[in-house]
Amino acid sequence: MAPLTAYPHLLKLPAWALASASHRFAAVDWTRPELAQGERVLATERDGPTRRRVVATQHAVYFQDLDHGFRSWHRLGWEQVEHARWDAARGTLRLVSLVPQLVPDLTLRLAAPGRLPDLARERVTATTLARVPLRHAGRVAGWLSARRPVAGDAEVTWVVRLAPGVALADADVDLAIRDARAHTGL
Image (cartoon, rainbow, N blue to C red):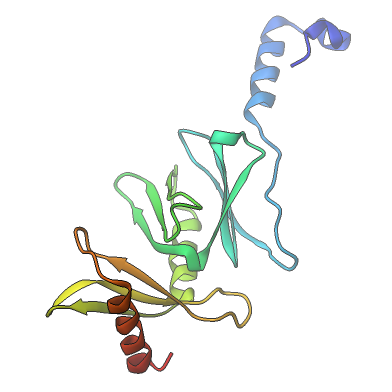
């Protein structure tokens, strides 16, 4: 930030106005995520503790990457969200990422629920074509979800979520996906 002497017109203001103005402008971040053509903003929120901005569109949720500054954004497609959970008692919305190695989970503390919690649940549901238990050795070893992006006619992606402590061979997972495809017609 430039020293105040670089802005002589500001030096005529009282000290309390300078402090108030610099604080106000430092807290505001005017950056926006880069949206795909045709993508439109459906909701915007700010996380209470971090002031991180969140922008939800019909295709994805974008949120500022605080590790790389306010100008850097994560994009989490709705088909990449395992589930959206609103905790009214705590005022928190949690979006669990299916690709945590690429995009982290998002937990927001909201002053009021606004439109985002309902929008997140609706968009995640719109991308989920099927969800079936993955059975192995006579017990539920996890879940299989058939997901498709909201936009376009993209191929169905089968997402495997194993229960804690369960390890399956690739051949067992492939067989479970083939059975689920046959059962659901996907």
